[in-house]
Length: 97
Image 1 (cartoon, rainbow, N blue to C red):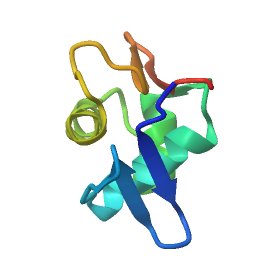
Image 2: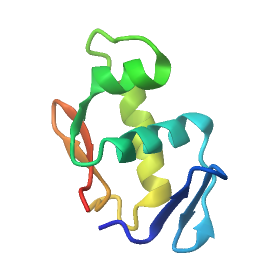
Image 3: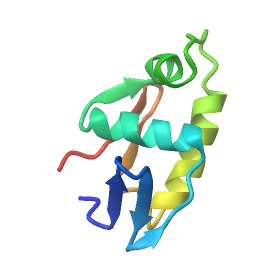
Image 4: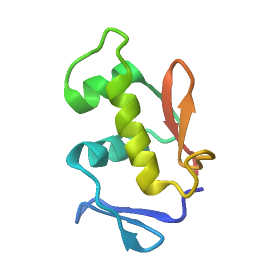
């Protein structure tokens, strides 16, 4: 599904189409969390708790901003994503292979 994306966790290296992609530490954590839970819908609260260590009271802005930045870096077409899908009103899901 996302055959252009390669994540080397040993080297903490991410490539898209064979080219290195710079991810911030938070973006990298977010990507690896999504991949580890591929196919599962992760709620905004779950993501916030896992990445930032606290729960939110419905404030999804931070997660949305980070997810948009991550999509810009790894997706070929952010308007038609093939890796990270939005589950409207719930959270996000990484594609199953």
